[in-house]
Each structure stands twice: as structure tokens, then as C-alpha cells.
Image (tube, rainbow, N blue to C red):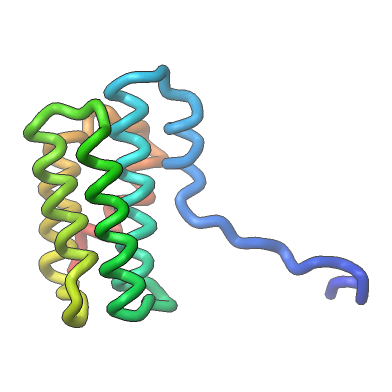
Length: 128
């Protein structure tokens, strides 16, 4: 119970990814952590407990694609994240199986750059 003048606690998802991005040195390691954080937020908007509208998902995915184009990632890493962004940002209802495959594929390519808590946050998304 909160006092009448108190604020409700804010729940923040993906703390481990945010922490990893904050600790990572500037360069590809940080870009991978940030790309995962962006994609995790897109997944939440597409298939999370409170899904976003088609228009909002499409707009967020377009902004994520623009950011991804300028990120310092290799072509293979950029490609798996682009596919994951596309799975989350379609104008049609999200396909959970396609999102799960995108997460699984991206984890195969970038999993060695994540710490255990970050992987633990992402692995549930790989299940359809």
C-alpha cells in the first residue's frame, strides 16, 4: 500500500540487457546489446502482455530499422536483427512463431556476446 502522495513502482523489463549495454565498451559489443534491447522492446510491443496497435508497431519498427542501418554491426548480425525487427513490425497481427524463430536465429549469431542474465531475459522469446 502506497501513501496517497507516493508513486507506484515502475516495472522495468529487460534490466539485464540495459545493464549489459551500459557496461559494454563503445563498439560492436555495445551495439549488439543495444540492438537486443531495441528488439526486446519491439517484441514486447508485438507479443507482450499489452500489445501495441499495428500503426505503433510499424512506426517503431521503421525507427529501429533506421537505427540499425547506422549501428556498427557486421552484415550477418545486422541481417538477423533486421529479420527480427521485420517479424515484430508488420502491419498484420504478429506471428509469434516467426518472432520466436527470429530470436532463436539472432541468439545463435550473437549469443556469445551476451552475459547469462541477458540470455535468460531473451530465451523465453525464442519459444513460440
